[in-house]
Every structure is written in structure tokens, then in C-alpha cells.
Length: 159
Ligand SMILES: NC(=O)c1ccc[n+]([C@@H]2O[C@H](COP(=O)([O-])OP(=O)(O)OC[C@H]3O[C@@H](n4cnc5c(N)ncnc54)[C@H](OP(=O)(O)O)[C@@H]3O)[C@@H](O)[C@H]2O)c1
Image 1 (cartoon, rainbow, N blue to C red):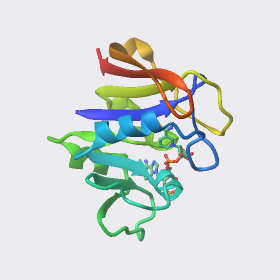
Image 2: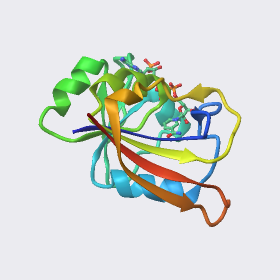
Image 3: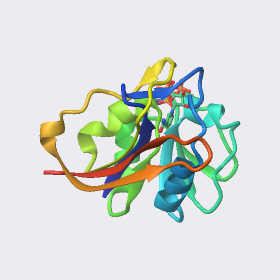
């Protein structure tokens, strides 16, 4: 099973200057629950935006074209094909960013989308999804206690 997980604002924004445009604890908690114990894949830009720190209790795969790039405790891949080959027979959760989502969207079985009911400013958007290919299986509303931001956790399966 290949899953893409992301949080966006109501216009599809996902990033600003290499990091997240918001701090929404409820979504970070949701992300943690969804990815705990799993193998996650991210692009080098996203990893740098996280301060190049590995998330605990998850197996991290990184994608870069740089064949010299190494990170202790992570596995580094250099092409989509290499990742797909390695993920055969196991679950993989793609955690961004935009370029990596775009590369793996054609192979996604499941989309786990947080939609924040607000508009933020930034520079990076989730790629265009052909929603006809997916069906909504769960939709859970939430409100973040600290920021007051509300939204939905949506899960889609490929039809
Ligand atoms: N809201 C969310 O849920 C969410 C989640 C994740 C990230 N983000 C945000 O998204 C933004 C980053 O997105 P981004 O699109 O700029 O960067 P990205 O997708 O994180 O990383 C792009 C980099 O990944 C590597 N890469 C991508 N495709 C590749 C391929 N086919 N083969 C080999 N390497 C490949 C390349 O690294 P090299 O240049 O090293 O070759 C490329 O420059 C940040 O603002 C981040 O905070 C948001």
C-alpha cells in the first residue's frame, strides 16, 4: 500500500520558504499517529526544512539526485523507480514535499489529506489530483484547541 499524507489550506497550499506555513498541533498529532512505526519517504528539501532531524520510531527514506548525500539512520534513494522497487511488498507513506508528491501520486493507493479551513500565504502547492480516480472513505472534522483552526482529516482510496 502506497499512501500520500499531507496538510493543505483551503487553496491547496502546503509550504512556505521550505517549511510549513502554520503550526497546528492537532494535525501534527494526527500525522504522528498515521506514520508511527511506518516507513516514510520525503524529498531532501522537506528534510532540510525539518532541520535534517529524523522522526523517531519511523523508518526514513530520503529522495535526492545527489549520489554523495548520506544521513546516518536513513536510507537514501536517487530515483522514483528505485523507491518503488524497494517498497514492493511493504507499506510506504510519502510525506512530501510537492515534487515528491507529484512523482508518487500516479502510484498512490491511498491519500490522507488534512484540509485547514483557512487561507495562508506561501509558495508551494499540492499537485493537481484527478479526484475522479479516488473515493472519499472517511472524513473527520477537527478543531485545534490552541489556534482555533478547524478542518477535516480526509482519507481517499483509489477506485
Ligand atoms: N503541508 C504538508 O503536508 C507538507 C509536507 C511535506 C513538505 N511540505 C512543504 O513542501 C515544501 C518542499 O517541497 P518541494 O517540492 O520544494 O521539495 P521536496 O519534494 O521536499 O524535495 C524536492 C527534492 O527531492 C529530490 N527529488 C524529488 N524528486 C526526485 C526524483 N524523481 N529523483 C531524485 N530526487 C528527487 C530532489 O532533491 P535534490 O535537489 O537533492 O536532488 C528535489 O530537489 C516545503 O515548504 C515543505 O515544508 C509540506
